[in-house]
Length: 173
View 1 (cartoon, one colour):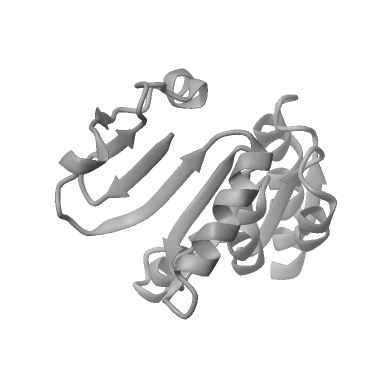
View 2 (cartoon, rainbow, N blue to C red):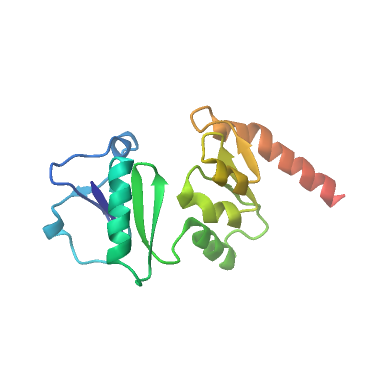
């Protein structure tokens, strides 16, 4: 399946009408259209969904097709390959928000579990990875917690945030 993310709706293109179970579970709204009926509008990213071994081949073909063009390809899960305009990332979005003053005086905790989260883990004040994230990504994060299937966010709220607040109180003295 191919999902095109725009500044409006998400478009799903799949010859058999297959919808990724994750999109169903997350109740993601989308329009199902054949590629020939895609509207001409700016895209934010294109996601390909399928078995990893197939997506590796797709990645290799797209890298060759887009060689020298300002795009990047990365996996956001073993079953998701993303095509993005070069320079677009969650980390860049955080930089933009900080530059606009939207986060003035606030510490940012970023949680990431796969390679599309790498830049935001570096850009945040505190990077957090679940224990089931790839090892090289966990090394980037300042904190590795429980698996994302074992209440990682609860652990952050119950343990990490109070520890950070306690450290800030000590530093303010």
